[in-house]
Image 1 (tube, rainbow, N blue to C red):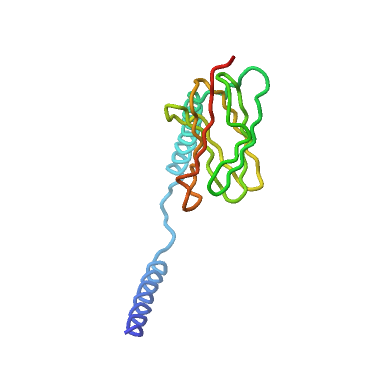
Image 2 (cartoon, helix red, strand yellow):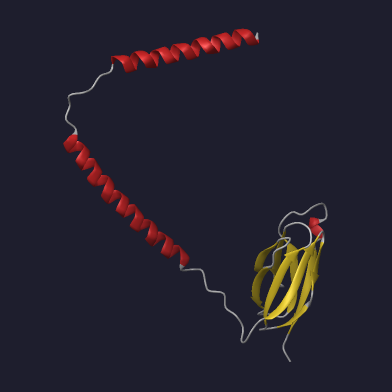
Length: 173
């Protein structure tokens, strides 16, 4: 059966190749003058290209307007080292004050993890990757008191769902 399929396939390929050969052999140079049409086409293509480039720049610039710059607190942020490992977060300090600017220095001891800080009303406040052998930094200014949850956003194994920690943010004294 496979031999028959092979022979039919080879015969079909030979017929297609022969058809291409006949078409190419019978075609010849044309005597038509297309120079005027060609020049007009290049002119249209040039202006269309410039229009599309300008439009792309405008759309790109317009789409970046909603992104605010990362605002920091007064003075240098307090650094907190965070290490992710299967299936827990080691956070050097789990307390902060409202209005305090904190710089989380995030790394991993084993595999990639997604470090995410959620506000008390479950809105994501900050996110970065925790990668072995590399330290990512993310600045957070806590704006309301309460329990902020730290969750892993990247699947890291069987107990990924339990990879959580809490940071307590209280009113300043």
